[in-house]
Length: 137
Image 1: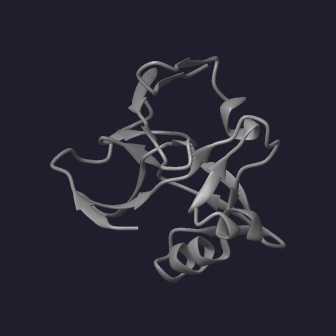
Image 2: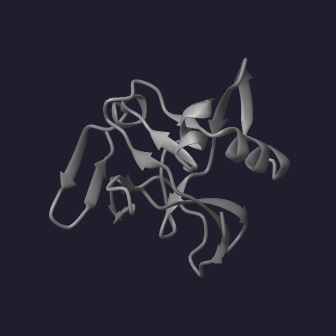
């Protein structure tokens, strides 16, 4: 999870956000998200898209890293809220996740599940370009 710097300040959630994803060497779609460390500095968080998974999950390593940085809010037994998600400086809604060994077994930060996608009015996935557009309700 590398740290990147962006010149754009933290902003409110916008009506529509397009995310340019990338293909993982194993064929999965990686969604490049960022978590704010301080104004202009973000930590990369790259879950894969898994629409067949009912709940979003993170690996135990990601759980430890984000917790140590104060980027997880505990809400239950091994359940957390990840606040302040961004993509290219645009704010996304918070993500509720559960810690799970599954992503770690595959060498992943986590999996973006159906529960996260359901909070949008529309999610467009362009398979040819690996671009995902999230439209707020």
